[in-house]
Amino acid sequence: MKLKFTKMHGAGNDFVVIDAIHQHINFTPDQWRHIGDRRFGIGADQILVVEKSDKPDVDFRYRIYNADGGEVEQCGNGSRAFVRFVIEKGLTDKTAIRVETMSGIIEPRLEADGNITVNMGAPVLDAASIPFDNSELVPVQQGDDSLWPLEINGRLVWISAVSMGNPHAVQVVADAEHFPVQIDGPLIEHHPRFPNRVNAGFMQIIDRNHIRLRVFERGAGETLACGTGACAAVVTGIRRGLLDSPVRVTTHGGELSIAWQGESHAVMLSGPAVTVFEGEITL
View 1 (spheres, helix red, strand yellow):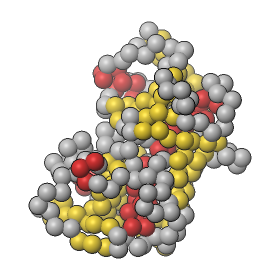
View 2 (spheres, rainbow, N blue to C red):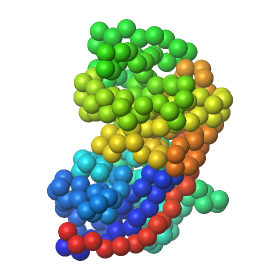
View 3 (spheres, helix red, strand yellow):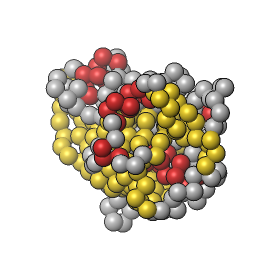
View 4 (cartoon, helix red, strand yellow):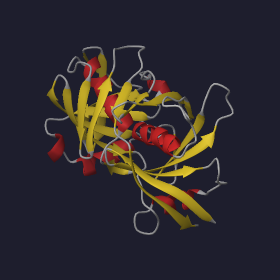
């Protein structure tokens, strides 16, 4: 079949976006991997699928596939690309929409300055719900946060576990740019205490309103930016008493802004979303 698609990115985190309202989509994991392959397919960190929602108060359904072909619960940068896509394609005349994901409802909106803000919902901190197996581990308390020890290559690293609809393990590092993300990232991603694997975040504190962040994403490897990873890192930093909202997040792909007012409040993610090109591929 011939598949029409749009290539987009949010701060360098790049996507293939597919309209499944006007095209029939029923792909295997191998086909999703082919689409995401940068040499033999189109190439992307994630593939985003736009569907109709069957809920009366929801505008669209949003499905996300990583480059490894696996379907995942959430993608923050992708949600910004999603709203720009449906507006540019004339699928809605709204600038603020409600979107159904595997992990719940999100509410992205196009701002007057062209950036997009997404209500990502409240962070999940309960270990079993992340999910994170913390049995028999003894945490260290820092502010309101619990730091958990993970054994990586015979040494302990201290992480905060949080879900933004998908699981994250965040650690504070002295120098994110020179940290061995490509070595530690996959070891944390596949750590047995995270039964669904995990996104590994490496956060450097610049000041109380600015961090530098690298994220090794589950199923995609290190990406130029990770929206849910930025949310998880800021939540962690605020809970530890290291950061104050709002926080500027510098990534290799650009800058994001995260605001969070504390427990039970939603995390607000703001940043760009850009259309790169349109195309068609035969599968």
